[in-house]
Length: 204
Image 1 (tube, rainbow, N blue to C red):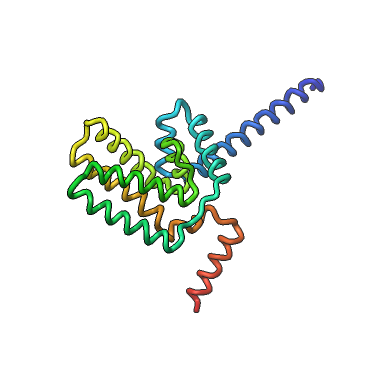
Image 2: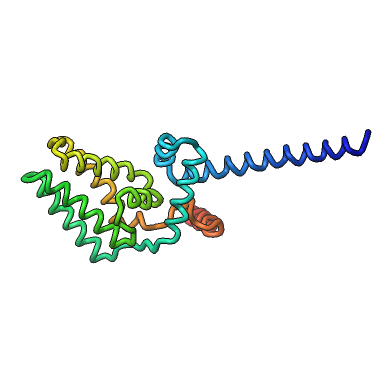
């Protein structure tokens, strides 16, 4: 067989291997992002022009989040915010519109105290989606309903829904346990060590 045929065969093999490696890396990236963002992954893919564009956006959110100095609330700050939320909830009985606006402002204050930039709502939601992907949809829905109310298109029921949505994110932002790194984010050696400690405890 002529040598040039072998060259073509070798090139073909390299191309096929390259495609297989690229597909494996793409599947791994998809799995990692889906595990991290959960329902937010599905929402982003559903609103983007392509899956690749959506995954690039989510990856960019992670990179931006890593540059932020997000910190847990102090015990005193946590107690103060919880008390403020109780006041806002009580305010809803007499003035739902003002209460929802206060809830939105209170959440922004908590986020700022935690270290999240709060200048722009969409960026704020994108940043918080990295740490709280299960409830960021509540934040968006609450904000949307609050805007409708500000435009004179709301109702008492929609304001009640807005408060419920806001509360879901608020509770995570002030929850001390929510500040702990997720198991999927722990370095492998810490994850293994944790499993070993659990196994030792079961045997004791």
